[in-house]
Image (cartoon, rainbow, N blue to C red; front, side):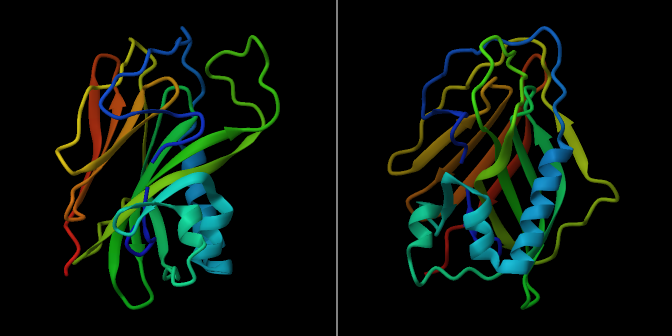
Length: 240
Protein backbone atom coordinates (compact mmCIF):
# COMPACT_ATOMS: atom_id res chain seq x y z
CA UNK A 1 0.00 0.00 0.00
CA UNK A 2 1.17 3.54 -0.28
CA UNK A 3 2.03 3.99 3.36
CA UNK A 4 1.99 0.30 3.94
CA UNK A 5 4.10 0.39 0.78
CA UNK A 6 2.11 -0.56 -2.33
CA UNK A 7 1.67 -4.26 -2.03
CA UNK A 8 -0.12 -7.37 -3.46
CA UNK A 9 -1.39 -11.48 -5.00
CA UNK A 10 -2.33 -14.94 -3.87
CA UNK A 11 0.21 -17.68 -3.47
CA UNK A 12 1.26 -21.15 -2.29
CA UNK A 13 -1.94 -23.19 -1.82
CA UNK A 14 -3.93 -20.70 -3.87
CA UNK A 15 -4.49 -21.43 -7.55
CA UNK A 16 -3.52 -18.87 -10.17
CA UNK A 17 -5.03 -18.04 -13.52
CA UNK A 18 -4.42 -15.40 -16.14
CA UNK A 19 -7.24 -15.44 -18.63
CA UNK A 20 -8.16 -19.10 -18.08
CA UNK A 21 -10.48 -20.97 -15.73
CA UNK A 22 -9.26 -23.46 -13.13
CA UNK A 23 -10.89 -26.82 -12.53
CA UNK A 24 -13.50 -26.85 -9.72
CA UNK A 25 -12.35 -28.27 -6.39
CA UNK A 26 -14.41 -30.80 -4.40
CA UNK A 27 -16.62 -29.02 -1.87
CA UNK A 28 -17.77 -30.32 1.48
CA UNK A 29 -21.50 -30.77 2.04
CA UNK A 30 -21.05 -29.26 5.49
CA UNK A 31 -19.88 -25.66 5.82
CA UNK A 32 -16.43 -25.54 7.44
CA UNK A 33 -15.79 -23.27 10.40
CA UNK A 34 -14.15 -20.39 8.54
CA UNK A 35 -13.08 -17.66 10.96
CA UNK A 36 -12.59 -14.12 9.54
CA UNK A 37 -11.41 -12.94 12.96
CA UNK A 38 -8.17 -14.85 12.27
CA UNK A 39 -7.44 -12.44 9.43
CA UNK A 40 -8.20 -9.47 11.65
CA UNK A 41 -5.85 -10.85 14.30
CA UNK A 42 -3.11 -11.40 11.71
CA UNK A 43 -3.47 -7.83 10.47
CA UNK A 44 -3.33 -6.39 13.99
CA UNK A 45 -0.26 -8.50 14.81
CA UNK A 46 1.42 -7.31 11.57
CA UNK A 47 0.81 -3.69 12.59
CA UNK A 48 2.11 -4.27 16.11
CA UNK A 49 5.27 -5.90 14.77
CA UNK A 50 5.83 -2.95 12.42
CA UNK A 51 5.63 -0.50 15.31
CA UNK A 52 8.18 -2.56 17.25
CA UNK A 53 10.68 -3.47 14.51
CA UNK A 54 9.87 -1.20 11.58
CA UNK A 55 7.76 -1.91 8.53
CA UNK A 56 10.50 -3.50 6.43
CA UNK A 57 11.33 -6.04 9.15
CA UNK A 58 7.64 -6.75 9.73
CA UNK A 59 7.13 -7.36 6.01
CA UNK A 60 9.99 -9.82 5.90
CA UNK A 61 8.74 -11.71 8.95
CA UNK A 62 5.07 -11.96 8.00
CA UNK A 63 5.15 -12.09 4.20
CA UNK A 64 5.07 -15.27 2.13
CA UNK A 65 8.08 -16.22 0.01
CA UNK A 66 6.34 -15.12 -3.18
CA UNK A 67 4.51 -12.09 -1.78
CA UNK A 68 4.26 -9.16 -4.18
CA UNK A 69 4.42 -5.39 -3.71
CA UNK A 70 3.91 -2.58 -6.22
CA UNK A 71 6.65 -0.03 -6.81
CA UNK A 72 4.43 0.80 -8.77
CA UNK A 73 4.95 -2.28 -10.99
CA UNK A 74 4.44 -5.67 -9.33
CA UNK A 75 7.63 -6.70 -7.56
CA UNK A 76 8.46 -9.70 -5.42
CA UNK A 77 8.93 -8.60 -1.82
CA UNK A 78 12.04 -10.79 -1.65
CA UNK A 79 13.59 -8.76 -4.49
CA UNK A 80 12.61 -5.44 -2.93
CA UNK A 81 14.19 -6.42 0.39
CA UNK A 82 17.51 -6.95 -1.38
CA UNK A 83 17.56 -3.31 -2.46
CA UNK A 84 19.30 -0.93 -0.07
CA UNK A 85 17.14 1.96 -1.26
CA UNK A 86 13.94 0.11 -0.30
CA UNK A 87 13.21 1.85 3.00
CA UNK A 88 9.40 2.02 3.41
CA UNK A 89 7.89 4.43 5.92
CA UNK A 90 6.27 2.70 8.90
CA UNK A 91 2.59 3.63 9.16
CA UNK A 92 -0.10 2.57 11.60
CA UNK A 93 -3.16 0.80 10.21
CA UNK A 94 -6.49 -0.70 11.24
CA UNK A 95 -8.67 -3.29 9.46
CA UNK A 96 -12.25 -2.17 8.69
CA UNK A 97 -13.51 -5.23 6.82
CA UNK A 98 -12.47 -8.89 6.48
CA UNK A 99 -13.63 -11.42 3.91
CA UNK A 100 -12.90 -15.17 3.88
CA UNK A 101 -13.30 -18.11 1.53
CA UNK A 102 -15.66 -20.95 2.44
CA UNK A 103 -12.76 -23.28 3.24
CA UNK A 104 -11.29 -20.76 5.70
CA UNK A 105 -7.82 -20.71 4.14
CA UNK A 106 -7.80 -17.45 2.20
CA UNK A 107 -8.85 -14.07 3.52
CA UNK A 108 -8.72 -10.41 2.59
CA UNK A 109 -8.61 -7.44 4.94
CA UNK A 110 -9.10 -3.79 4.01
CA UNK A 111 -8.91 -0.68 6.13
CA UNK A 112 -7.15 2.59 6.76
CA UNK A 113 -3.57 3.70 7.45
CA UNK A 114 -1.86 6.79 8.84
CA UNK A 115 1.73 7.96 8.34
CA UNK A 116 3.82 9.97 10.83
CA UNK A 117 3.71 12.97 8.45
CA UNK A 118 -0.07 13.15 8.77
CA UNK A 119 -0.96 11.58 5.42
CA UNK A 120 -3.70 8.96 5.32
CA UNK A 121 -4.84 6.21 2.98
CA UNK A 122 -6.26 2.72 2.68
CA UNK A 123 -4.93 -0.81 2.20
CA UNK A 124 -6.14 -4.18 0.98
CA UNK A 125 -4.17 -7.24 2.08
CA UNK A 126 -4.57 -10.86 0.97
CA UNK A 127 -3.72 -13.57 3.50
CA UNK A 128 -3.18 -17.28 2.94
CA UNK A 129 -3.04 -20.13 5.46
CA UNK A 130 0.27 -22.00 5.11
CA UNK A 131 0.04 -25.51 6.50
CA UNK A 132 2.99 -27.13 8.27
CA UNK A 133 3.54 -30.84 8.48
CA UNK A 134 1.79 -33.65 6.64
CA UNK A 135 -1.88 -33.43 5.76
CA UNK A 136 -4.03 -36.47 6.71
CA UNK A 137 -4.85 -38.59 3.67
CA UNK A 138 -8.62 -38.36 4.15
CA UNK A 139 -8.72 -34.79 5.42
CA UNK A 140 -11.73 -32.81 4.12
CA UNK A 141 -11.23 -29.58 2.14
CA UNK A 142 -12.01 -27.62 5.30
CA UNK A 143 -9.18 -29.25 7.27
CA UNK A 144 -6.87 -26.73 8.95
CA UNK A 145 -3.97 -28.30 10.79
CA UNK A 146 -0.85 -26.68 12.14
CA UNK A 147 0.41 -23.67 10.24
CA UNK A 148 0.40 -19.90 10.11
CA UNK A 149 -1.11 -17.00 8.22
CA UNK A 150 1.15 -15.19 5.76
CA UNK A 151 0.24 -12.17 3.70
CA UNK A 152 0.74 -12.89 0.05
CA UNK A 153 -0.44 -9.65 -1.54
CA UNK A 154 -1.12 -6.12 -0.38
CA UNK A 155 -1.92 -2.84 -2.06
CA UNK A 156 -3.37 0.55 -1.31
CA UNK A 157 -3.18 4.26 -1.95
CA UNK A 158 -3.15 7.65 -0.27
CA UNK A 159 -6.41 9.56 0.29
CA UNK A 160 -7.21 13.23 0.75
CA UNK A 161 -9.38 12.33 3.76
CA UNK A 162 -9.38 9.19 5.91
CA UNK A 163 -11.97 6.47 5.48
CA UNK A 164 -14.49 6.47 8.30
CA UNK A 165 -13.66 3.72 10.79
CA UNK A 166 -16.64 1.44 11.54
CA UNK A 167 -17.91 0.87 15.07
CA UNK A 168 -17.43 -2.85 14.46
CA UNK A 169 -15.24 -4.58 11.88
CA UNK A 170 -17.41 -6.01 9.11
CA UNK A 171 -16.85 -9.69 8.30
CA UNK A 172 -18.26 -11.99 5.66
CA UNK A 173 -17.63 -15.60 4.65
CA UNK A 174 -18.19 -16.97 1.15
CA UNK A 175 -21.13 -19.32 0.71
CA UNK A 176 -20.35 -23.03 0.67
CA UNK A 177 -23.32 -23.76 -1.59
CA UNK A 178 -23.14 -24.31 -5.32
CA UNK A 179 -20.01 -24.69 -7.42
CA UNK A 180 -18.05 -21.48 -8.09
CA UNK A 181 -15.65 -21.31 -11.00
CA UNK A 182 -12.93 -18.89 -12.04
CA UNK A 183 -14.20 -16.13 -14.35
CA UNK A 184 -12.57 -15.76 -17.75
CA UNK A 185 -10.74 -12.52 -18.47
CA UNK A 186 -7.74 -11.22 -20.37
CA UNK A 187 -5.67 -8.08 -19.77
CA UNK A 188 -5.61 -5.15 -22.21
CA UNK A 189 -2.58 -4.98 -24.51
CA UNK A 190 0.54 -3.96 -22.62
CA UNK A 191 -1.04 -4.44 -19.19
CA UNK A 192 -0.05 -6.91 -16.47
CA UNK A 193 -2.76 -8.92 -14.73
CA UNK A 194 -2.97 -11.72 -12.22
CA UNK A 195 -5.89 -13.56 -10.68
CA UNK A 196 -5.61 -15.42 -7.39
CA UNK A 197 -8.13 -18.01 -6.26
CA UNK A 198 -8.78 -19.61 -2.92
CA UNK A 199 -8.33 -23.37 -3.14
CA UNK A 200 -12.10 -23.90 -3.15
CA UNK A 201 -12.56 -21.00 -5.64
CA UNK A 202 -15.12 -19.25 -3.41
CA UNK A 203 -12.95 -16.11 -3.26
CA UNK A 204 -11.01 -14.59 -6.12
CA UNK A 205 -8.72 -11.60 -6.30
CA UNK A 206 -7.52 -9.80 -9.43
CA UNK A 207 -5.03 -7.00 -9.95
CA UNK A 208 -4.48 -5.20 -13.21
CA UNK A 209 -1.59 -2.80 -13.83
CA UNK A 210 -1.71 -0.63 -16.93
CA UNK A 211 1.42 0.49 -18.83
CA UNK A 212 1.20 3.95 -17.18
CA UNK A 213 1.34 2.39 -13.71
CA UNK A 214 -2.34 2.88 -12.85
CA UNK A 215 -3.83 -0.11 -11.08
CA UNK A 216 -7.14 -1.72 -10.17
CA UNK A 217 -7.78 -4.39 -7.58
CA UNK A 218 -11.00 -6.38 -7.32
CA UNK A 219 -12.01 -8.99 -4.74
CA UNK A 220 -15.06 -11.18 -5.37
CA UNK A 221 -16.88 -13.47 -2.94
CA UNK A 222 -19.20 -16.35 -3.86
CA UNK A 223 -22.81 -15.97 -2.59
CA UNK A 224 -24.01 -19.45 -3.51
CA UNK A 225 -25.16 -18.54 -7.01
CA UNK A 226 -22.77 -15.85 -8.27
CA UNK A 227 -19.85 -13.69 -7.22
CA UNK A 228 -20.36 -10.43 -5.35
CA UNK A 229 -17.72 -7.73 -5.77
CA UNK A 230 -16.78 -6.84 -2.20
CA UNK A 231 -13.71 -4.68 -2.94
CA UNK A 232 -13.05 -2.57 -6.04
CA UNK A 233 -10.00 -0.30 -5.62
CA UNK A 234 -8.51 1.99 -8.24
CA UNK A 235 -5.09 3.65 -8.07
CA UNK A 236 -4.18 6.48 -10.43
CA UNK A 237 -0.95 6.46 -12.45
CA UNK A 238 1.98 7.91 -10.48
CA UNK A 239 2.84 11.52 -11.24
CA UNK A 240 5.94 12.04 -13.42
